[in-house]
Amino acid sequence: MIEYILQFLAIYIVCLFKFIGGPVLGTAANYTVLEIVFVTVSGMMTSVLVFTFLGEWIKEKWATKSQKKSKKFSSKNRKIIQIWQKFGAWGVAAITPLILTPIGGTIVMTSFGVKRRRIFSYMLVSAICWSLFFGLTINRLMAIPFLNNLIG
Image (tube, rainbow, N blue to C red):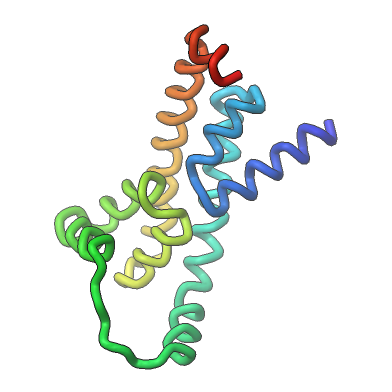
């Protein structure tokens, strides 16, 4: 039982920073799809919760410590702004597990001034959908004997 709890906590900590770690490590640990979804969503939503409440504070501290430099937009920043302009908060929430980290997606949404309640709800829907998708997909792929023998 203690081994299971430690394993769960390790996967949870990975999910705080990288979403895809939950489905991959959960499958490696022989978790059910529901366990994978639970640990992945829990990890992502903890990051969302923390960085939503600390987002303004972090933004203020970052602004005071960094010097005023001319802002240069990278191609990644331009793509995020284009997604924001086309799809809004839903678009950012949808790409967070794929491209951004839970922390990055939350900071982007906070920077654009999305209300906390909407950040929580959009990110929760995104986390549940993507964790189900990845959990089921990875479980199905591991059911293929060739892939299971190749990886496991």
